[in-house]
Length: 571
Image (cartoon, rainbow, N blue to C red; front, side):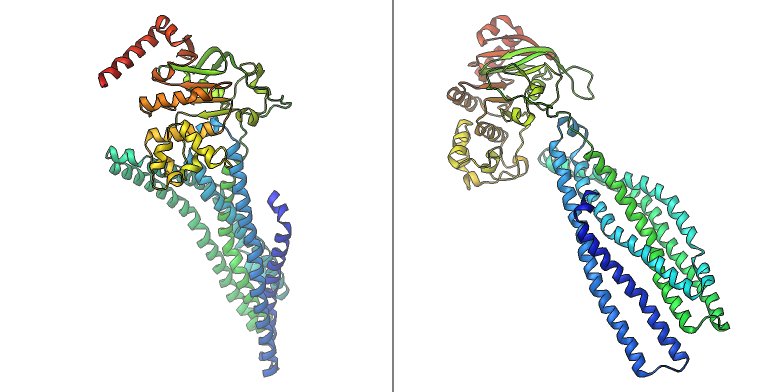
């Protein structure tokens, strides 16, 4: 409705042009009637017929001009609505947080912005035009027909209630089946997307045939449901045509008898048949319009469900001013992911001062959960997380995130140039600043070795780069932000030991006054950390310096000895 209000002038003039088109079409049978009656009565002349022919021609030209006008204005409105709705959908999606995207697949969201939006656009364009056109043409044609002969008009319209009843019965079935088709289209889109994203893995495991067969099964199921939908759609249009043909048969029989009996003139009969011809299209279009509206309503409901989603992370009503970053604190924090029974974090407490904090632990011990909560990606209860002693939930969301540079476990790169990927968080950064960040991340020399240097494209999700190169580009992107808190969640796992040491050394001159949290499965990069915590089952099992943990933590001592022994053996 907001878009109808926004573009009301465009719609007003478009509908006015549509009404003008219909009125001219409705007047043509009156001219034909006059010409036929004049011919029957022997009163027609070449001049009168030429005048009436010229009148019909001028009406036809007017119809063409008005039809172009309403198509440009009304169908243009539907495209503008589609554009605005797509922008609004994306705006809503980027505001939503992790829990939403954990529940919805990318394929489903892509289907919303593709097929579903197209259906809404068609319903609000051709659907509305056809409905108004059919309604006006039906009403006006019926009035003209009734003026000629009310009884014949009643006979012509007698089959119409059957069409209305059938349309009502089939609409509910159409809605249900179309909803199923759209859900399957989402599954099909998601499968295709994930297959393309994992194409190298599929080839490495020689699973091309299996993926093809699975996609084929999904496609066949999609087609089966489309055919079930088409069965419903296929009843509406032919039945509309049958109703129209039945009306035509009744008029031919009874109207012909009335003409023979002299109750109506031949001109009236021809005009009546012409009006019935004008009425036939709206009768046939009713089924198509019902189908179009049903598709649009189904798609709009799917889009509306996303539009109505609200992020769990919300701005505080009266946010406090952001303080200087002097510490991070965690107090008795417990957290579990949606749909999981086990706690990711269990009553965890931690104080983090400027410097390098290392985190180690087994897989599933809660390291990533802690990083994601500190990076403000999931909601937490009040009085659990603090920045410089102020509750996270009392600070502006965007402002708090702007204090944090987060490098997640899964490296995310765009199909763009290396330069643009590094500068993603700071599009206005200078070339010198980008190079400085790349040097700190230990990737500058390798970038320079590419044919186009920083202008080299990395491919979809960094497909053209190695795992270590992707991680270091993500690290350079975080360092370029120059923020007081940096969280690196196992972001150096694919980097060789020498490069890892060089990156950690680069941190030395960069760390003063900043908080850096480094999660790693390797102990080596954490040797120079101010403090290391060992996590187990969502809690802190031990903490201290490297030397202190060697003495107090059996787990830490074991993994250090194992990695040291493995490194010596490899050497």
